[in-house]
Each structure stands twice: as C-alpha cells, then as structure tokens.
Image (cartoon, rainbow, N blue to C red; front, side, top):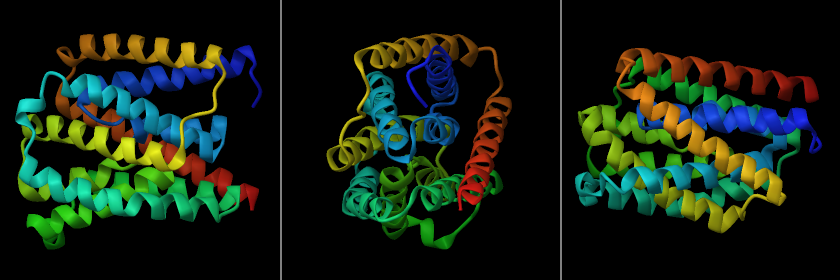
Amino acid sequence: MGYTVASEALLAGIVLLGSCVQWLTGMGFALVAVPALVLLLGPAQGVVLANCTCGAISVVGLASGWRQVRPAAMLPLCAAAACTVPAGTWTTRQLPEPVLLLLMGGLVTIAVLLVMRGARLPALRGTKGAVAAGAVGGFMNSAAGVGGPPVSLYAVNAGWTVREFVPNAQFYGVVVNVFSLAVNGVPELRAGRWVTVVAAMVTGGLIGGWLAGRTSERRARLMVLGLALAGGVVTVGKGLVGM
C-alpha cells in the first residue's frame, strides 16, 4: 500500500490501538497490531516495526518497574531467546509472502488460543521451562513479531501474579526486541511515517493509561485476545488466498 492518506490513517489507528492495549493490560501490542501491520506494510516491515514499537513501549514501562524484575528467571528466558532470534529471521527470509502470512497468522492464532486456555504444561516449569519459553518466544518474535505468549504461558505455570508478570514481561520485551532489531534491522519508513507512529504511540499510551483505572482486568484481557484472534484468522485467510 502506498503512502496515501488512508494508509497513514490506518497505520496510526493500528499503532494507537496496540499502544493503548499495551498500557491498559501490560502487554498485547504485538498480538493486536502485528496481523494488521503485516497486512498493511508486508511481513518484513510489519514485523520490524512491531519489534521497534514494542521495544520502545517496554523501555518506558520498565522505567517504573525495574525493581520488580526477577533476574534468576529472566536470564534463562533472555539467553534462550537470543539463541533462536536468528533462526526465526532465517526462516522467514526463505519463505514466499503467502506462506509467511500463513505462518504469522497461524502463530498468533495458536498462541492466543493457548493463552485463552491458560495451558498448564509441566515442560514450562522451572529453569527448563524458562529456557523453552524463551527459545520459542525468541523465534516467534523475530519471525512473526509476537514473542510474548510463550512468556505468558511460562508465567501462568510459574504461578506469577499480574503484578509480578508485567515488569518481567517488559524487561523481556526490551531484550528480545533489541535482539530482533539487531538481526532484522530497523523499519524502512520515511520521516512522515515515523512522526505518525510516534504520535500514535504517545496518544495510545495516554488513552490506555486513562482506561487502566476504569476497565476491569478480565474485560481488558478478553478484548486483547479477541482482537488478536480476529487478526490472526484474517492473516491466515489472506495467506490462503495468496496461495
């Protein structure tokens, strides 16, 4: 899609919604925004823009919660993610666009369904569980821009509360997105689009922060997962049509 007024407005809306969701729930930008960004900008640019935006939002969010980060749990998660980020990038570079859309939409859809079920998996407990979640998350983040769900599942199986999860998820978001950007590169956007993205991020953050005290956690979570599931299914559909 070219640089039209409609595409600019759509990009702004996607980033604004994703940022709002991220500030409202502590996570969810990638789940909500990646399918739409991939359809708007293409798989490669959609993913790297999501990596860049998620990383920036995580840095801001972590500024006030870094004291709650659990280094013992984060070290194996982040180390494993660093090892699998290159594999995710390599995989996507070998595939044609319709297959990429299928892969990305499928990963988002499966991840959302697993998080909805709150899957209890013995393999996601302890240090081995942290390594497994980090490895899968790193691959998914660089391949599809969605690295959070495996960490969410690890947190569920570790019995973390939401208050414990959010700062650790933000720390992981900073690390895994830095690795992903180092391998994938930064988004190739003209200056006007960067202005659009930054303005949408800030506006979405303000709206999300305002809504956070007025929306129940359960309702916000259902909204995020519903939007993400719809986006994943649409992306799979476009991939099937393209084939």
